Image 1 (tube, rainbow, N blue to C red):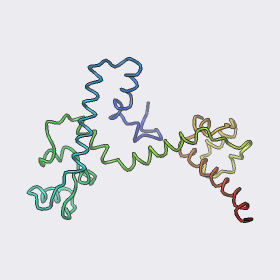
Image 2 (cartoon, rainbow, N blue to C red):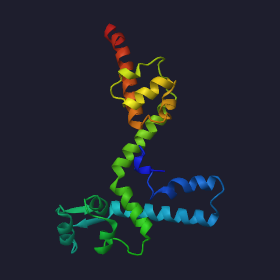
Image 3 (cartoon, rainbow, N blue to C red):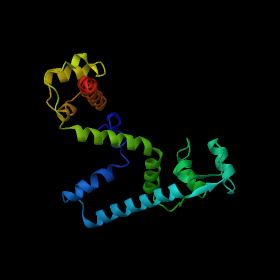
Image 4 (spheres, helix red, strand yellow):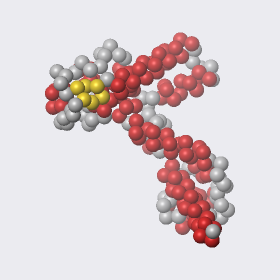
Length: 206
C-alpha cells in the first residue's frame, strides 16, 4: 500500500502501523498476551515522553541554551518547552539526547514516535477532523440527478465518475475509486452552499 499517496498519509504512516493495526489484531485473536503487553508498554512510554516534552522547559539561562540557539538559529525568549523546541526546523529527538535534554536509554521507536506526534500534531488534528466530518456525513443523502459537471471544484475524474455512478449518499461517493477526499470535501461544501441558498428566501420573507 502506497501510503504516501493516501489522502490521510499523515495518519496512515509506516511508523505508526503498529498503533493502528495491533488493536485490530488483538480483537481478531492474532496478538498474544506477551505481544499485547509489549505494545501497551510502548504506548505508555510514548505518552509519558510526550507529556514530559510538553511540560519540561529549557530556560535561556540553562548552560545548554546557547548551543541550542546556535543550532536552531532562533533565540530562546525566557524559556521554551522541549516540545516547541522539537517543532523548530532541524531539531530532532536525537538532538535532545545529544544536548542532555532526553533519556538516551529510551527506546528509539518511543523517542521517534513521540517526536513525530509532536511535530505534526496540528496537521494530524486537522486531518482527523476531516475524517470525523466525512464519517458524520457519510449517510447524508445526495440530491437526485446532480449535475456534477457544473461543480468546478471537483476534479475532472471525480466529475466523470460521479456522473456515471450517481451515488445516493456521500458515503457511497467517498468509496468510488478516483474520487479523492478533496473531492468529497468540495462536494460537501457545494451541498452546504446549496442548502444555504435554498433557505435564504425563507429567511428574507420573515
